[in-house]
Length: 123
Image (cartoon, rainbow, N blue to C red; front, side):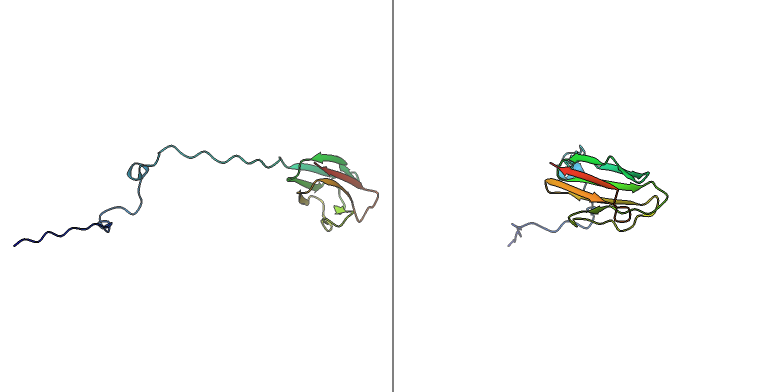
């Protein structure tokens, strides 16, 4: 009498099979996937120089990251008039960034030198 054993479910892989499969082994394409394209707006730079913000007024789409860099020899802040953001004092060469997510107009100033003002209009 002969007995034949059958397995109807998945079987364990033999121990000689490598742990990492190649594209050919899995049947997937060997072509690299394309990198996803970001729809985020390009960042915008504002220079702090000669006790002014340059540009003093800018219009940006929502989602834009704006970076202010202190190019003066003294500390400055970037402080929103509506308290949306406050950089705290920036030493010469330091930067502060904020990403604008909501449409509207945001006026800002330097808390140390209040005559320094600027506006970001978010579309």
